[in-house]
Image 1 (cartoon, helix red, strand yellow):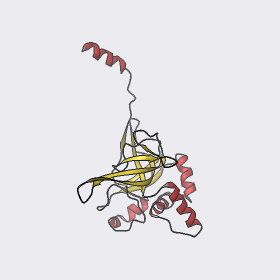
Image 2 (tube, rainbow, N blue to C red):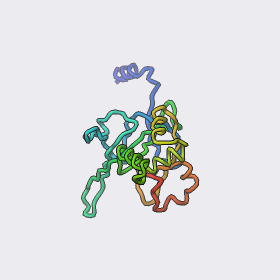
Image 3 (cartoon, one colour):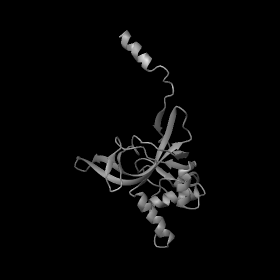
Amino acid sequence: MATKLSKLRKAVSGLTNITTNRADFSIGVKTGSMADMVPQKIGGLNYSVIQDGGELVASSKCKPFCIEDVMLHDRKKDDNGNWVTKDLPSAVINFKLDSSTEQEMVYTSMVFRGTTWEEIVQDFELNHKGKGKLGSGATALYYIFSKGNGMSSIEHFLEELENGTPIKFAQYKREYTKGLNFTSHQYYLSDKSKKDSDDSSNDTDY
């Protein structure tokens, strides 16, 4: 035993620069920059990353990503008591929050459920041409980058993400939905009383 302990102590000698990752599911105003990582779960759900061509790669096997399309796997019982899995495509951005320290990276994954990045871009293209309204995911994103961060366009927003510019937003919970919602911090601070309404135009469910 002593020999084993001595070997272990020698092996770990000097290993003091240890860091951990922690997801922040608390409600409130957050600030963070885009981060390359593999979240353990997204919104409490298992997920797979959607590769080009539609192939799904399980989170346990995927490479770190900062912005990506994923498939959320929501496993629950149906009316007959049988376990079923509902798959939902979603657009995701990982953020390293400013509450992180040298020893702990605090993160959140901003999710736009039921859509993909291609569909969000198409929404903005059609709206720009006057041919359609923004969908719920694109609307939530618009409020975050335009109203919340003073950015002129989605192109401007993506450029700032790539440059590592901190983004300010809010995450909160509703009584009748699972997980977190995302919106601009001004909307969150000025309209807290509306968070339990049925108007989801300025948010997106986890």
